[in-house]
Length: 120
Image (cartoon, rainbow, N blue to C red):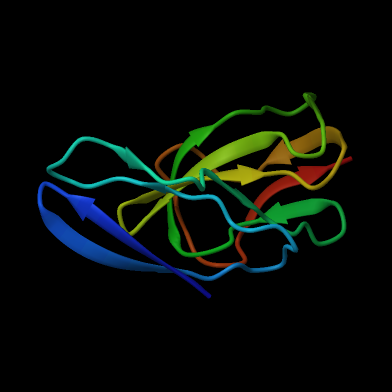
């Protein structure tokens, strides 16, 4: 678990970020509700794919989807964006292949481990 201290409009917040299923440090965008967007040096979360799928790394809301069925995806490519507790996180594929199905829609609420994308 990594801890970060962020100051927004003179208020200091401590943020804990736990990396799940990756050997690289997590990258997360911090967004404050009444302040301008604040980015730390971490902007993407690499999600461990299980077999030929990508699952939600945590509970949140899908705010964008960057791929559709039939798209070719490279390893390291962002495939969706998740918002959780005012944090925006790019979900990045650790697979290379062709998208078979996108299992969520923009605005969908997901739980940790929910299926997001499957590959052929």
